[in-house]
Length: 336
Image 1 (cartoon, rainbow, N blue to C red):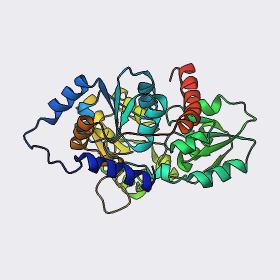
Image 2 (spheres, rainbow, N blue to C red; image 1 turned 60 degrees about the horizontal axis):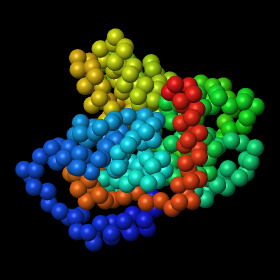
Image 3 (tube, rainbow, N blue to C red; image 1 turned 120 degrees about the vertical axis):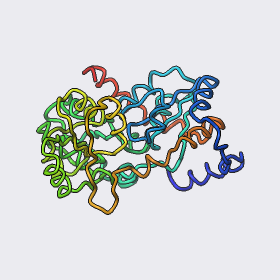
Image 4 (cartoon, rainbow, N blue to C red; image 1 turned 135 degrees about the horizontal axis):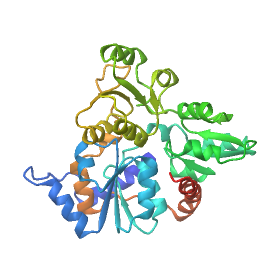
């Protein structure tokens, strides 16, 4: 979402007078949110990277594929998306007649920002014989320029579903793209984009953690840089990482992805130890600053006042829906 649209939306919210509301400290936000869900027939969809309180109050927690599938199938009148902007956009694309809310409109995505629409269109137009497979972490405008959307859960199956001779552009994450080239053996043109969280993990610090915890298993998301993936014992989507920690007998895991997933890992395996892989900076955490813009207080306010909404023009909704539906069809075909 561009700065002009954010400013316009914020101005509208200020007119309605609730941006600066002080919430009563004695208010039970969990109870209030449950009340609002029932009164407004609302569903809260939350990504694994959200803060624990939001995960605990959500109706469904998942990765990008699971959230898109849930958004497509829900019969709720109002979708409250606790995630980042492109995720809420995807929910709106799949439910153009429903009200879709995002607690903080500034919850963007560095990976989505790495693919400006005009530049990507020029890149695509230079290679007209290539099919465009785009990671879901992108804007609606980029989705509209794509042939198929994918997530880290289904990208390999989608690539392998295409004829071997078909030329492919993969965007916007170059690390995920490079990993998929190795997994599928397919040559692909890669857009030069990355995620600020997954590209900062320190190989040196992970190596030191392995020495400190010699029995710990290193698991990593494929958006990580190649040196980190090379030392990982298991690589997979966020949901795959969670499932792996549940099913594996190991008692300790070094987790190279956004730290929000550790909350679900600890819930599912309370007797196991989960160690967040450290970044190559002075911060002690690996949180996505955009994901963490959403808070329980903002979630409550957006449900109470039904703002901020995701608003999209009809032409963009139609154009961006086609590659998402193609992704969901292929995922259903393979039972993903």
